[in-house]
Image (cartoon, rainbow, N blue to C red; front, top):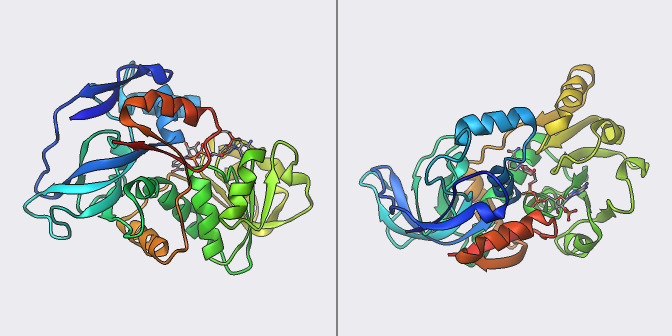
Length: 327
Ligand SMILES: NC(=O)c1ccc[n+]([C@@H]2O[C@H](COP(=O)([O-])OP(=O)(O)OC[C@H]3O[C@@H](n4cnc5c(N)ncnc54)[C@H](OP(=O)(O)O)[C@@H]3O)[C@@H](O)[C@H]2O)c1
């Protein structure tokens, strides 16, 4: 089968489409013929090892110290059709249309993938695809949708809660805006000028252009700040968080120390962790999608052969919502 592999860490040019062995499902796995997958910021970070020093070391130990382990396939999410099932699989049958996440194993930028029917916390997961979505739309739900859900649930948003989402225009952010609205929150979305109209169209009550305005100086106080991108000063944004508010950090990097300090010295809740989505989350998202509460924002789709071009576009920061790869 064709798969996107990379033999060294670096720029998008290191990506190659290579013929690798088609996987065979174990007794508790399903084999999915992938119709669509995505390129996320996380794929680009892993490809180039663009992480803070300590995390970079962890990643090298895990993914290969000097270069990625042989035939490591990128890609975290997918949609497609079940082609075969292991003998112990009960929930799925051949021909089912599904969407899912490859989890920390990656491997979704390929023609086929095997996923466990009952995965552990870091092993992704698969569920029936929303009936009202194309493969292209469904492929972009598992990563951003589940991560947004994971963090927002930690904040337990109530109807009327004031939530600010920083970095709202990308994969996690566009789902976070819609989910926060679904939970009844009053949502302020922060991103660059070009993404504000899209953010309003998916439900943001207020939008702030970070290239023109610093939300930490606006005088508004928020019950929840969800910093998706981790590019703002923790101490500045902490000032506009309610005394009992919740700070969600999807990419804590430099904010770990002030985050722990705030946790210890105030009533504020600071959540900095790895999101671990479940099958139940996929089913929850599917039900919201089928009820018309959530859509996928797709900016561009590329064929698998243009994977390097897709990475370049994602890295340019222009991406609105998601970039899909049609396999
Ligand atoms: N904790 C976890 O479990 C977990 C899991 C997956 C991913 N992550 C991390 O989450 C982060 C975001 O992921 P994503 O896929 O949503 O990324 P994304 O799709 O690239 O979205 C990020 C958004 O932030 C905007 N942005 C950039 N600089 C900004 C600033 N200074 N202020 C406000 N907005 C800004 C970007 O727009 P412009 O660049 O155009 O301005 C873009 O719209 C990544 O760093 C990823 O590593 C964490």
